[in-house]
Length: 203
Image (cartoon, rainbow, N blue to C red; front, side, top):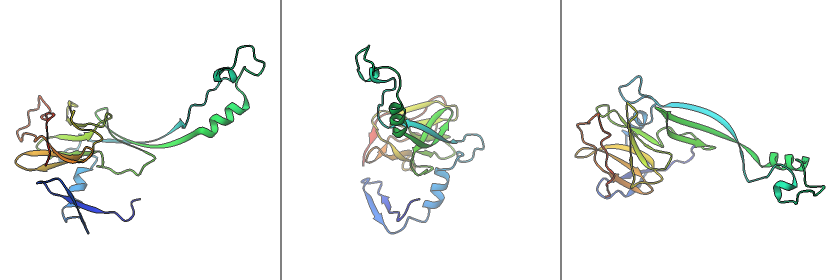
């Protein structure tokens, strides 16, 4: 659970975050539809949320006795997996709490031993566009339409908080890794192409 949250507003003119005491009035409404399971105005275009627990080894711990650690063949103490090996592996095993969000088979958000924050890694477009902006597995900003067609913005990295904004035309803003505005999305969406190009427009 988030304690003592801090709030910032960002100017479209310079992209610099400014601290404020409380979020603007429309933020609650905006975040509700930005982070919703369903795309605005749709009952079928939706993010699937799954919760899972995975076991992982914190460090490399060879199983198979001393030979696995480089002992010479024929060494009386070099064969088999010892109780010590098993205990060492168990001590280094940890359980990971994983919450994943997928859309059309694409991972649009994953939280591993972290607080689950819907909307942190994706944002729905206005209903007229029918798109989602998200940080993909490579950390790049990507867009996807209802049919699952995707396009990646190669100039970005470590994308979080993608958000659709209205300027002269719809556009996407995100932290990638610092606040920036990206190429505007044409208002007349061509369903044959995801309408985003790689050029970014900072400031």
